Length: 335
View 1 (tube, one colour):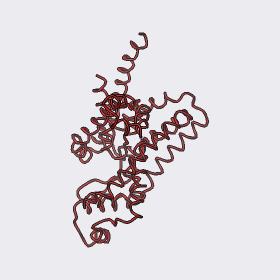
View 2 (cartoon, helix red, strand yellow; view 1 turned 30 degrees about the vertical axis):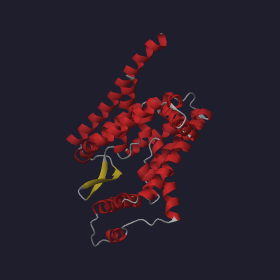
View 3 (cartoon, one colour; view 1 turned 120 degrees about the horizontal axis):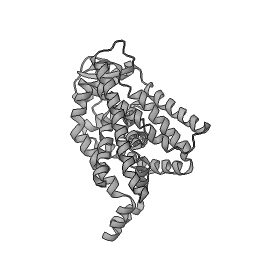
């Protein structure tokens, strides 16, 4: 039963990673498994490698120590969600954008109570950390103008389709058939892997958006298209190093400065509500919608009504799950 529960948690995290602006870290925090996830990942290290060559008993002991059943179920759920739901979520975002975002907005809004409960004493310091986190997420969201977003989408479409036109953007991309494999790019890809995974771990921050800001996102797309496996392996190595180091750092902060760190994470989730606000102006690139900026609808149509209903549905879903979880905990506490 516990494995199935963790599989479904992983499934939710996987779906979140498909939705632009919604991070897996946000969902893990919403589900109340963020601390356990950090503990499990930070437990991985040299001891795990040594156990692999030390016999069956050592491997079994190590799997228990790193909470492998929990991590495995989460990973399996996330993987299945990404494979099974990618097309469905893509379709929903293209054809029912506002109601789809509305559902996630409601889910995140109602789930704010989870990190809030984990703050033992909300002080003036906690408030400062919370406000800084909100400003960070909103600031990152506003870091690219609408025109920049459209140009970025055009670049991405050109790289994926290998179509060249007469525009300056397409001409530059047409000339960039591969990414140079020099020491500078190797170091940049390694550092970018660290940055991306750190962003993905933190609630409310998109790893791909951070790569876009530092100018590496399109180079990675080119590497994927051209099968430049060495640079991709270097990027993956950076992500692995970042994952092991950053999770340990976050675990230390939560243990040493629990309320301040949780207040910061709480602020990140609040800030993410700005990123996933369902009503947005947009443009079209290669037949796909590109969100530009948040707006307040100037009319109330069926779309706005359906979006409000999905927001309410998201809130109700969270409340129901919290009630179920509360009932499951009471017998255990009484026992």
